[in-house]
Amino acid sequence: MRFWDLVSLISENLRRRKGRVFLTAVGVVIGTAAVVLLVSLATGLQKSATSNLWGITDLSRIDVYPNYGEGMYMEAVPMGGGGGGTTSNVKLLTPTVLDEIASIPGVRSVIPRDYMYGQGVITFGKFETWAGFMGVKTDSLENLGYELDRGTMDLRKGTIVAGSWMVKNFYVPSLRPGQEPPEMPDILDQRVKLKLTKWTTDGQEVSRTVELKVVGVLREMRNEADGSFFVSMEELETWNTWFNNGQRINRNKNGYNDVIVRAESPEVVMDVTQQINDMGYMAYSPQSTVEGINSFFVILQVVFGGIGAIALLVAAIGIANTMTMAILERTREIGLMKAVGATNRDVLTIFLGEAAGIGFLGGLGGALLGWVGGYALNVVSMQFLASQAQQQGYMSTGLSADTPLWLLLFAILFATLVGFLSGLYPALRAATLEPVTALKYE
Picture: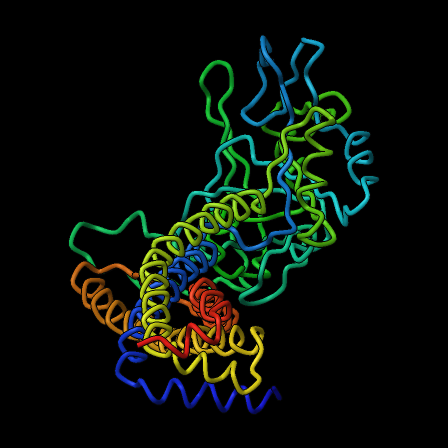
C-alpha cells in the first residue's frame, strides 16, 4: 500500500468517528497541556532565579582566599593586614603563588585586592561619608569585569573610582533635625578630601588628609563593588603603611587577603576552581552556584513533567480502549480487507496510524493550550505582583512561565508516541485476525 493512500485511509477512518476521536483526544490534550505548562513554569522559575542572583554578574570570575588551616593564630597587625599563621598547613597568597595560578590553563588574569586597614572619612564641601576603600593591582577595573556608569575605570595615582552606592551616601553632619537635606552635587571629576585617622598607643588621635579626584562611577552590580571606593594597590599600600606606623607589608611573607581570578570562559571555570582548591587554597566561583541552581530546576522540571505525564497515561488508556472498541466494530471490515489482498502489515499500519493520529491531534491541541496557559499565567501574575509591589513598596521579579520551542515540539512528538504505543496491542490483535473468522463475525 502506497504511503499517501495509507494516510488518506487513516484520515478517512478518523473522520468517520469524529465524536469518539474528539473525546479520546481531549484526554491527550489535557495531559499534554499539563506537561507543557508545568515544565514551562519550572523553566521560567529557573531563568528568573539565575537572572536575579544577587551579585552574580560575571560567571568567568573566581574568588580565591588564603587557607589558614586549623590551629592557626593571627599576629597582632591591623585589620586585614594579612597576618600569617605558624602552622605548616597555612597557605598564603604570595606573589609566587599568584604566578602559579596564572600558569593554570584557562586562566586569563590574576588580580590581587586589599582593603584599607584604618578609618577614613571623605569630605566634599559640607558633605561627608565614611570611606570603604579597596585597592586592586590593575590599571583598570574593567579587568575585574566591573561595569562603568560614567567617567573612566582607569586607576592612577591620586584618583579614585566610586561604587554606585557611594556617590549616594554623602550627608551633611551639621544638618539640624527637621531641616531638609540639600541635594547632593555630582562628584564626578571633582576633588574630594580623604581624612585618615589612627590612634597612638597612649590614645592620641593622629590624622592625615589626602586629596583625590573622582574619575569614574560604576554601574550598580549588586556586589561588593557597589559599597567601595577603588584606588590603585600602590596608593592603598602607602596609606596602610602609615596606619601600620611606617611598617610596609611583606607580600612574600604575609601574602594578599584575596585574589580575583578571571577565566577565559565560563566553560573552564569549574575546572580552574578545582585546580586552585587542589593547590590548598579556598576558591569559589559564582558558576558553581548557578550550576547548583540549574541542577535543582532540572529535577523540578522532571518532577513537574512527571506529574503532567500521569494525565497522559490516563489518556493512553483511553486511546487503547477506543482502538479496542474500533476493532470489535470493524472486525468484518478487517476480514474484507484481508480477503481482497491486504496483508497483516497493512492492517497493523492502519490501526497504528489511527492511534498515532489521535495522539498527534491531542498533542497539537495540548501544546497550543499549554502555551496559551503559560502566557495567561504571566499576564495574571505580573498584574497581581505589580499591584502587591506598589502597595508594599518593593520591586517584584514576578512569576513567569517560559515555553521554549523545543518543549512544544517534544510535547507533540511525545503525545504521538504515546498514541502509537497505546494502539500497539489493539493493532496487533487486528492484524492477526483470521479472514474467515473475521468475515463471519456478527
